Image (cartoon, rainbow, N blue to C red; front, side, top):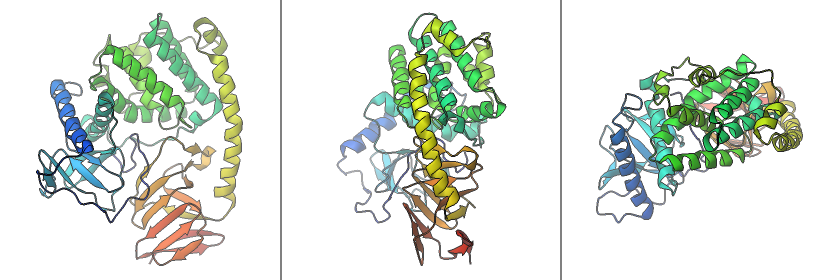
Length: 435
């Protein structure tokens, strides 16, 4: 997996480098409630995946796991590192993550092992905990099952009126397919909305890239989470409802689409996921797997009139949102394209961010409200927006308001520079330079 973390990633701000508490160094330590939950989760996941015995992907999914507190950077692991230097608490291990490592829900290569990293606190509900951890265990397994280095592609169309409208209609149809009669017709209509949204190959490819990465991970997680059939249906509906409340769908839609299609397909084709390869297009695969023909000559209102997907309400909501989006984009263009800025090019970038509230800025990139980037030049922490280039080659922040030895600050951002780097002015803007 690349150093761009794709999983349900949450930004870590103000991570403490000088911890007030120390990791526990002996098995006599009295466990806190959180530590007991961690112990239980390790046991639950081990038991669930022991039952699977590697059948789901023809590979053992269970492996090294780090549960980490983003404030203190203290972590708990289900195994020791290669150097056997972690501190033991009964059957688990603990230590403190180095300050130069980002914290996120992801998979990392560290200490000669590949780990799944999960941020604390864990969900309170057991199946949700299982879901989260198995999702990240899939990312750890990805290189072994042929899904390594999936390309990051922009899905900015899913922040626009038309893209959001068609995605919401697709999810409405999938929900009805799962919970009501005429399942086959609702699946057919979901794929109709999907194909209508994916008319352009660039859109089809971009959505597919994220679905192969996050969609397959989430499908694996729900299927092995220990939920029964009723719990699975309830989870999918609740997950969809929570998803629809997100400010943007750009980086989180795959957590909904593939689990819905995959679960519906699993009744008649339980091992469908084993047929998926890195070059598979999931839209084409699902159309063929569900053995359905899609009539693209129908109108949206015609399909809604027959099957009731609440088209009028969704359209009205998305039209109102579009007005606000256009106003927001105008302000962001002025901030990052018209005024003076600092440009930071990437060398060996490592990033964490919140994917739920980003704003695509047409063909100029995407604005991330919060992020943390570690690179050769230092550590950048952003709390008030930064513009990521479309090809992920650089990030742009507003012009510095303070430049001192080792520290540069601007409106809602701070850069901790490595000693050999400095910020210099070039024309009306600023760049980083080594030496």
